[in-house]
Image 1 (spheres, rainbow, N blue to C red):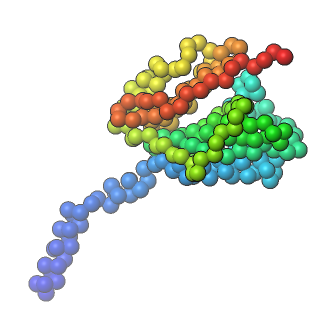
Image 2 (image 1 turned 45 degrees about the vertical axis):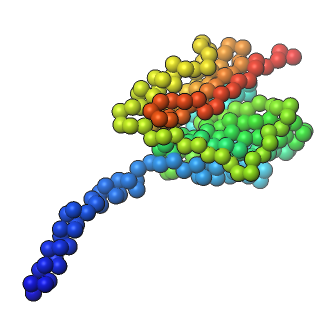
Image 3 (image 1 turned 180 degrees about the vertical axis):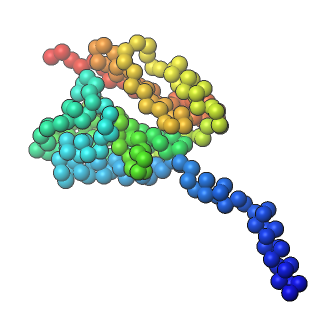
Amino acid sequence: MRLAIALLALALTACSTGPNPRDRYARMLKPTANPSKVVAAELGFARMAQDEGQWTAFREYAADDGVMFVPEPVIARDWLKGRADPAQAVRWQPHHVWSSCDGSLAVTRGAWQRPDGSNGYFTTVWQRRRDGEYRWTLDQGDSLETPLEAPEFVRTDVADCPARGLAAELREQAEQSRPVTGGTYFDQVSADSSLFLTFVVSPDLSRNWKLMLHRDGMMVDAMTGSVIAPSED
């Protein structure tokens, strides 16, 4: 009997001094980056374009407020409504994915090929929905004279997790370092502010953007780019 009481007391002591189950579950439920799932969404998007039609896929994977450039910025669902799919869809492949620490926002970059033989690149912003699935909130690209070289594997970069209360400061840092002043901003910010992508569209429809990630307590440049104003011809 004494042995049973001693063992029970030992078990209770272990439970009281061991890890709190609530803490363990909280860690399990905390939003985290999942670049592989973003890549899977991009590949599924590209596959649907081939199997079911280019604009069908764009409609299916677009967020309700998703923006695309044609070349002026438009709400994708409005522009795509009723639009017939081309006979042959463009093909594309992701080369690189950047993700916020909490996985709420990610950016992919890769190469595309049109049926006419032209090549280019794309940049797509992916936002995680409540159900855990990703939908794109911004999609843009441009043609290239020389096709992008395909990597052996998709590169991934994940932002550092910000300290508690640092989100507002990080966002301010990012906003103050926009690539150009003036124009219309299309900011894409993760829920934890560890990833910030800003597109600036000038009145002539040229575009400049900057992607920033949280590293060592500050926002650092991860990617920049631009698209020249479209020709009037």
